[in-house]
Structures are given as C-alpha cells and as structure tokens.
Image (cartoon, rainbow, N blue to C red; front, side, top):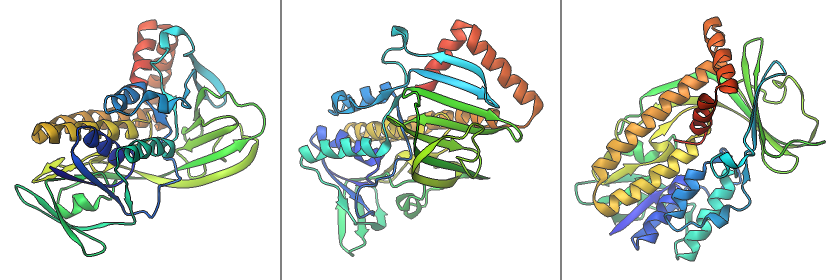
Length: 354
C-alpha cells in the first residue's frame, strides 16, 4: 500500500508518523521550500501528547513544554476570576505551551529516524481519483499513482478543491491580530491572561511562550495597542492580522482521498483546539486506511469537528458580544466557575479536551 500525504504541517507530519509506524509506505510533500518558522498554535493538550505517544512519538520529546499553572480573567484590568492549576489535582491534566513549529520539528525528526523525509518545494497540481487508486500530478509535471491520498494542506486545500468537495461556512468580517514579543520585567511563565475590555468588549489573550516571551491575540486589528495595560516591549518578533473562517468540508472522504486538519475544518482560535483537532484527525485517518474503515473515519471525525466548531463559535460570541444579556450571562458563568467546584472542574476539563 502506498499513501501520499499533501502538506507537512502538524496534521500531515502526524499522519506520516502514524502510517510509518505501521510499516505503510508513505510519502509526504510540502509546497513550501522549507519548514515553517512561524507558530500559529502554541497550546498542546496532554491528551494530544498521549495520542502522539501511541504512534511512537515519545512524550520525552516534549519535555520543554511549559504547563499552564494559572488562568485569570480580567475585565477592564480588574480580575474577575483566577484559577490556580498548580495543585496535584491538575497535574498532567492542563494545557501545555509548546509552539507549533517546535511540534513540527519533533514530528519531522521522528520521521527522519524512520527513513521518511519531507519533499519540500513540491506541490500537487492535479489529482484524479477513482475507486481503486489516485493519480496525482506534481509541479514538476511528474505523475504518480497511490492507493490513498491524505489532504492535509490547510484551509485553502488544493486537494479538496481538485476533488470538488464543498467547504461551506462563512468568513467573519472582523480582523483579529497577533503579536509575539519579548518583554522587560517579570512575566509569570505559566499564567494565561484573558482580558475582556470595554468599550466594544474586545478580547485579548496573553499567552506565555517562555522566559520573557509572550504571545498576544486580540479581536482587534492591533493586538498590542488593544491591551488596557501595555507591555514593556523589549523586542517584537512578529506581528500579523487575520480574519476568521468558520467552515467544514461537506465530506472528509471521496474515492481514494481523505481530508484532515484545516483542509477539513476551520474555526476561531478561541479555545486553542485547532492544532489538537488536526493531530487527532491524522491519527484517525492513518488508522482508518490501515483497517479499511475510511467511511467510518469520515463520519466520526466530521461529527466531532462539527461539535468543536459549535462550542468554539459559542465561546467566541460570548466573550466578544456587546449584547447586555450575553454579557450578564458571562459574568454569572465566571462567578459560578469561581465558587462552584463541580462547575470549575468541568470548565477546566473543557479547556483541554477536544
């Protein structure tokens, strides 16, 4: 059996790791000329690391990951809620901070040890899939036949487009922004800060990325100026803005092609579930190919992602809404999390589960 994986992000690399562990001949291509140095996602769930361990990616390779030990919600600079996650109760059960590019480097290293190298600078240009095989054409005009193709080539997936699989949904009009910076002074290395600010009830999230290094994500166009309490910035590593798409492929399976990760679904970064969902897709897709259960894969993963999108969109609307009743409901929920142990435990579990 031969499998082609299109896209060498976390989803594609994970699929290759899962397939190679089972001795399945897999090939992975990436249109970029080299590995990405950017890190869109920074959160990786303990359950995701367990999933990677099941396909031979040792948990020891994530030893540099920084566990979240605290989460605070502020409203206009005043603390509404603080969750202390440093106790033994939450050991191994909370999110970890490990930049996406480092995760990809770990996965690529595992693949190299297994004799699988990413073919950078090679792009799929066409695909013709029948019942028993898929013939792909590359940017160098070479054609090749595979038993299966996994499209892990992102939101603008060419695999999905060539297979004429619909990607219905919507593109939100608002521009969000992101900034990775080094700061002067002490920044708690394990603390996530969520700022709910008025006017406009904008959202800003400050995520630790290591000693003196933080990421700011904002629902406004300028992440740094949106902060009510400005950071003392030492160095700006990157700035960017983006629009949120909320979409899901009509099917994850057609003929001899499977979709996984952002090629199959996309949603807002609220909750940090995107990369983790893609990794879970990849492991499931590899297992489905090896067991001959691709239809089941398509059905189950579509259902799971649909629920993640629903919850993520609800959370986004709640924390960015200007509706008075919605804001009142948010403050009541925050208070309930603070004082009711069962609600607090359920909320913490929700933070690190897909």
